[in-house]
Length: 278
Picture 1 (cartoon, rainbow, N blue to C red):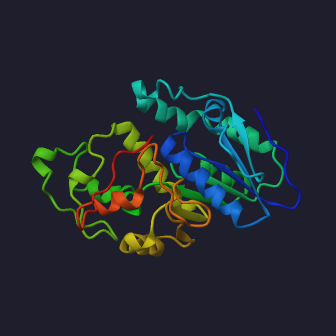
Picture 2: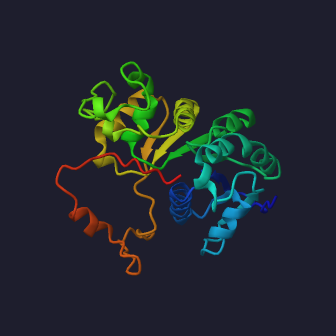
């Protein structure tokens, strides 16, 4: 394992993302934003050795350094062939080497962990270290998982959309209505069970962060704030197209222009994005 040296006197955040592009990138961008606002932060960003090879060449501020754990999960190159197996490995194989790495670090002040790391909360509790959980999808999606028991009262999963596709679900706090077609109806049952389990542990954290825009999900965020007794915060979209001064950036090579994309969306559209970048 590769462990960095610490900076004396710095507030030390250890960040560990779920090993997927839609999770690693937002967490890294959030860490860059945090260190840009304080000279007294040190971030140790923990990934597998394979993931370090993927992102390790990207420019990093001096106050962000990498640490690695062994490749104890299936490779990125083949995980699609058995995603349920990959997901289960993330839940069960990463905990021990991650905790061993923590043993070699000095003065960890906060653990910043992806919600979809089942073991993040337990490690924080064992070490008496505050845990800030990061959710990289919408607050609406989080609420669906958080109140999954309410759905199971009326539906069997996977939901038969030919029978229930036009139903209107109105019993989830903070969500006026949602249809079964907007839910993860085709997700592998074991993956779905684990994801719900991860979300259910959020109540044991000290902070819950969302990479969303608060103004776009006010009812959902307010319902979650009333649910938990700790800070529930919208940190804004942690994407690389926003520089640290808040100016919009487009990527001409790939055609990413967020503002133009939003303008082209139908009015009042709010379908939950269910294509998880796991």
